[in-house]
Amino acid sequence: MRRKERGEPQLFGLLERPMRSPQQAMDTVTYKIFLVGRSGVGKSAMVAKLAGLSEPVVHHGTPGIQTTTVYWPFQPAGSERSLMFRFQLWDCGETAMKKFDHILPACKEKADAVVFVFAFTNRSSFMDLPQDMANILDPSKNLLCLAVGTKYDNSLQNDVSEAEVCKFERTSHVPVFRVGSTSGANNEVVPSSIAALLNGLAECLWHQDQIAAGVIASCPPPLFAKMTNSTS
Image (cartoon, rainbow, N blue to C red):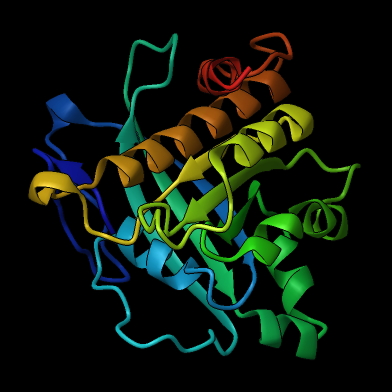
């Protein structure tokens, strides 16, 4: 589990959570995030980065469902107070999901968002995104949909161009975040790409809740609008 405190990630036990002084108290909002992607694209490595854990040295397909909780403080746009976002990340192996019929329904049950993961070094994982979205998403449910491209910094091995990703964002109206394989530039404690992904998740989920509550009109969140406008 991670929280950002003076730029340093901190780990907590299963029954622990970030503690703050009464003057710095924050309300906690909890969201369930379902990660979808082909085997080997880097879902488990990405979760490890988000949680401040060591990345697996050798790739092993996730045998079933792996859940990880990440705490992240964030002040949504237009809000005067910061909130503690509690992300419950559900990662399941592609093979296990195909083998056991109960895994996909369990991951989708009460999910607030689905994050589709592809690798810039694996072209088929990117080309399969539209079909994966059609198979997983239920039009009758208001699920936030995002995409993450891993291994972004392997430019010499990339099989997916930036122009293709930008076109996908425009046509699907799904923002794409980019995460590299390295820990970050200048020995960053929290790599900028990881911070951007956590901030993006927090902003988009909070914006979706505000629409559902009738607080704001239905419109893209500021982050989404900024990303799509920059690619047009």
